[in-house]
Amino acid sequence: MSISQSKLHLLNVLELCVTVFRGPNAEEWANLAKVGVPELLASVQKNPDAFLAPVQRLNQLSASLSDEDVAVLETEYVRLFIAGSGGIPAPLYESCHLATTPRTMGQSALDMQTRLQEAGLEISLDSNEPADHLTIELEFLFYLLSEGWFGQSEQAVQGGEFAESIMLPWVRHFRDALNKANPHPIFTCIADLTVATLEAVSKI
Image (cartoon, rainbow, N blue to C red; front, side, top):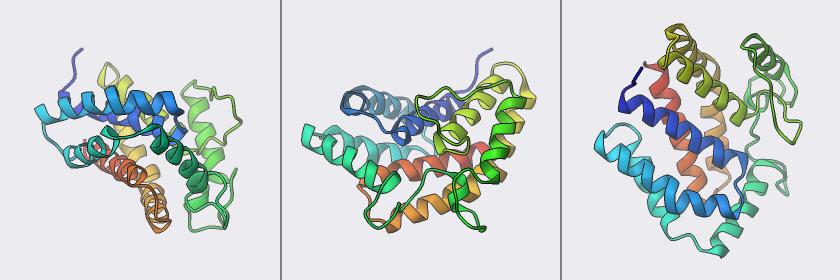
C-alpha cells in the first residue's frame, strides 16, 4: 500500500527529530548535515508544506557545521537536556512539563509504559530512560502512523489522538522552556519542527 508524499515527510521528520533529541555523536551529526537534511529538504520542496521553512533553516544551519561546531552542539545538548549548571533548562520528559509537581518517573511515564505494553512494544535502549522520554514518545507515534498508513487505519487515528491530546500540550511547553535557555539555533529549529509535525499529525 502506497502512502502520500506528505505522510512520508511526516515519518521522515519524526526520524530526524528522534535522532537529534537522542543526542547524535559527531559522525551522526556529519551524516545529518551532509545527507539526511539535504535529502529531506529535496523531498519537501517537491511537495511544500508546513515543514518547508524550518527544514530550509535547518539545512542552512547544518550545511556549514565544522568539527568545532559539532563539539559545541554536543556540549549544548548536555547543558540543555541533561545537566545544566543551574538546573536542566528543558528536560526531555513529559512529566517535567506538566502542571503538577515536575519529576521524572511520574504518572505520565507509567501511562506511557502501559501504552507500549498494550501495543506489544518494549523499550530497547542502553540507558534506563523513563517511558515518557521525548524520543520514546516520538518513536511510538512513528509506530502508530506507519502501522496505520501501511495497513491498519485505526492505528493512524490513534496516532493523531496521541499527538494532539498527549504530546502537543507538553511538547509546546518543552519548546518554550528550551527557547528561554538561549539554545543553539539548531535545537530551536528542531523543536519547531517537532511541534509542526505534531500539529500536522493531529489534523490528519
